[in-house]
Image 1 (cartoon, chains in turn green, yellow):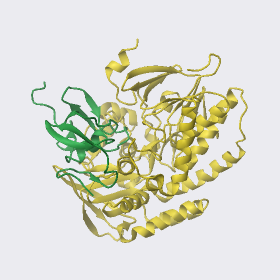
Image 2 (cartoon, each protein chain N blue to C red):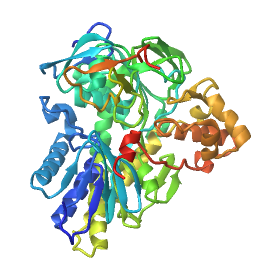
Image 3 (tube, each protein chain N blue to C red):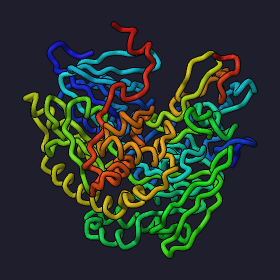
Image 4 (cartoon, one colour):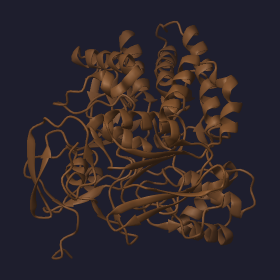
Length: 102
Length: 456
């Protein structure tokens, strides 16, 4: 079993895949090839995003593209659905909107 | 794509129903187009991990591995031979006038059809539990997908709660994979489960498998519980509070909770296609109406869990039947369907038994505290829905218009049934079906405005 400190998810199998590097809130992190963006983030952090209509943070819910709870921002401005998007080398992902955005 | 004189048949969904429908049509010489959200065919139940994953089918699908492998091979063979057109990672977001609107990473496209087979499957059926908006609460299906398709557990110490076959199955799968499961909390009481035994006995091996799994869970499994609430800190779930069947208050420390009460048919596209719906008291939800073959009329056919919640085996049968109905309506030779019709009847009896054994917790939903979040999308509380129903009237679409429950980004998939119970209760109505059904609205999945504009 392994899970980086601060991550929510625990890897139980398939840990021999190639590493994929990405930026999470500006900090370099490592995922594995074949991870979804949701897996990549939540093995490194406890949550994905801030709820728009409540005080709590969110970490996804259905993982099958139905609930739309896991849409997150990329630094370039485009949003992606974390559960159905494969992570890719060099992705610049955000769990908080940037302060310099309107 | 298709020969000029061939009818254009489109299948939405590449789970067990969609795959068997495609196979039946291809065997008759048609070349159907199969549109699916997944990267690889299989649906949610037989979902395949991405390339580079190495666990064998037995590790992923357990006793159902043979069925999974057969379905994947059937589909991949048809696609490789060019006998079907496969559009993976495509979401159908709207349909009208014989045209589907599908979006993908590459943009959007319109796909015309003469006949349409909808095999859209189901989502988890969710009831609100106080605190379920916290990070670390997932649907049971989500936890199973994470395990199967990503090899991960959604927490270090997991509580599973709700009811239905997936509850014990997932607990068994997680334990086997090395995850820590702290408790399995079934809101169904043992008495109701026993009452369903005559119906469950029509599939003895399945029923026995379920009982064996339950036995292996031992002291982790509790029947007849009441879920009181989920405690959380800023970083997520901290504990589940519940009352056991003996009335004692319990608290189980955990960092993730899985919730689910069986399944809810995914019917948005069927609705947009003009299908009629009726409230089904056994499954406690609105289901589209068809004949025994899955014929909904107007060149539309339904199959799988999006029509009747019969599970994967039932979906394979229903997929073949819907395709046979389509062939028959096209005036083409139809395969022998007598055995499948019989099988379907038996599977339906079993599935209805399951639905009665592990029922939707309507009374608990009606009793949830006012400050419980009902709609996770927009944080709308049970109290707000009750208030809206009190001044707006006990009708689902009115409550949605006035109070937004069902208007969020999931479009009511996860709150509609609970909201219906709250509305019925405010209006003094006996069952949730009396408050009406939320009308589906396109796009049925969020789509970028660009995708809807660019092709005019």
